[in-house]
Image (cartoon, rainbow, N blue to C red):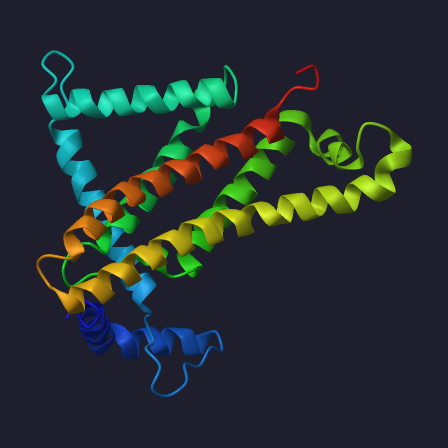
Length: 247
């Protein structure tokens, strides 16, 4: 059963590393209740994604060539050019400098979304903590980018609205709007991936080799789509944070 496989992996990892991890947590005064897994599923699956991406990056880097690029390298260059084009269009002519953060998050989210389709594994993004962590990274980063671009004073000034006497009304509205952004990113990503895994799991129990196939194909498409939506919305937030006053 697919839904039991991640639990077996979680149990195995906790059996090997759980006591050491629990001892580390106890140093900081954190005590895990009896019967609860010390290392949660999303942390284990997220770790698998990071390890896989790290190994793949080393393999791809060793095969890069300027004179004779392979088909895979050419495909990846097209993806990079597409992302750079999106950043230039959405953020501005300096948008390419945000490629590392946007590209890294996009790749991590994509692999995390698709990991649940591998037998015995689960999607880290099907747990709300992982999308929330990714959304928090974007929230902190675009505010940092805005402060770096305009300075702290000018960046905070835009929360007050176009004229000073609207500040009592605009400040709460702007604060609520900004705080809603990571929540929106989190709920959209988590809700879709969780629903996809749930549907596949349900239909897998009904007909293991026939009924889940359309849902698996839909989940692959959904995994790409949700990663694309996440980074596109992140670009919008970056654009609003670093936009010049004359735009």
